[in-house]
Length: 457
Image (cartoon, rainbow, N blue to C red; front, top):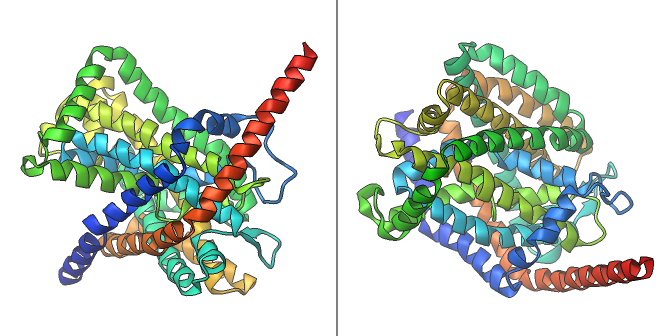
C-alpha cells in the first residue's frame, strides 16, 4: 500500500506540476486580455444579476441563475477554503495568499468562458433536462468527441474522491475531534442527507443549495468579519506581510519566491476550480436567454469563493502569526488562528465551517459526476445506479482511510483540466463573439431603463 501511495503521489505531483498550473493561469490571462478585463468592467452587473429577486423564469433551463450559482458554489466551497489555504501558507509563506488572489482574478475570466460555452452547446437529454459542460462543447463546438469522452471519464471518477469520500472523511474527522461523535454516526447522518437531496435530481439540488449555500457562506464571513473588526489594527500589517512575502519569498519553504507562487496558485485553483471544467456543468442547467448572461453570474463564483472566503482564512492566519509554528498543519493551523482571536468559540466555528463546506461539496459534485456518467452511458435508467453508488461512498468515506482514493481522484481532477483548457483556447473566438452580444444587450437594456426613467419623470 505504501508503494502504491508513493507512485500515486509522484503522478499527482507531475500532473499538478508547473506546466498545468502555467496553462491554467495562462488561459485566464489570455481570456482576460481578449475579453478586455470583463471581470472588472462587469462584476457589479454580475453581482446584481446574482442577487436580484426577478430571476429569469421564462427562458430555457431547469434552475434559476441563483440556483445554478449556488450549486456551483456548493461544489466549490469545500475543505480547500479552510485546509487548502492553511496548507498554502505553510508551504509557500504568507505571500501564497497574494498568488491565490492573482489566480482568482484571472480565473474569473476562465470561469466566464467555461459558462459561455456550457450554455452555448448544451443539449436536452432524454428526460427533458439540460445537459452541458466541457464534454458537450468539446464534441459539438470543437468537434473533438474523444476529448469530451476523456473529460467525462476523469470527471465521473474524480467525483467519488475529491467531491465525495474525502469530503465526508473530513466532516467525520472534525466532528469526532471537536464533538466526540463516532465517525459511523456522522457517516449515517451525511448519507441520509445526501440521499434525500441527490435522489431528487437537479431541481432538488438547486433548491437545497439556494438556501444552504448563502447560510454557510454568511456564517463563515460573519465570523471572519468579527475577527477583523475586533482586531482592525492587525489587518493592514497582515496585508503588508502578504504583499512583501509574495515578492521576497519570506517565510516560504526554502525562502523561494517560487514556493509562494506555486502553492498560492495551486491551492487557489483547487479552491475555485477555474479551468477544471466542473462548474460549467451546473451553469448549463440555468434558465437564461443568452450564454453571456449566465456566464457573468458564474464568474462571481470565483470572486465569492477565493477573493472573499479564502481571504478570510488567509488573512486571519497571517494576522495570528501562527503560520511560523511548524507543528501546525492544515485545519489545525486555521483552528489555532481562529482560537487565538475568538477563544474557545474559534475551533467550533472552524468545525462548523468545515461541516457546511464539505457537505455542500458532496451535493454539488454528485451532479457533476452524474452528468459526466450520463454523457458516457446514454441510458437514463443507469443514472440511479450512479446515484446509489455515490451515496454509498459518502458513508464509506466517513468511516475509512482514503489516502489512496484521495490521491487517485486528485490525479483525475487534474486530468479533467487538460481537455477543458484545450476547448477554452480552441473556442475562444466563440467566447469573444458571445461576449460582444451580451455587452451590446446590456447597453441596450441600460438605455431602455434610462429612457423609461426619463419618461416617468
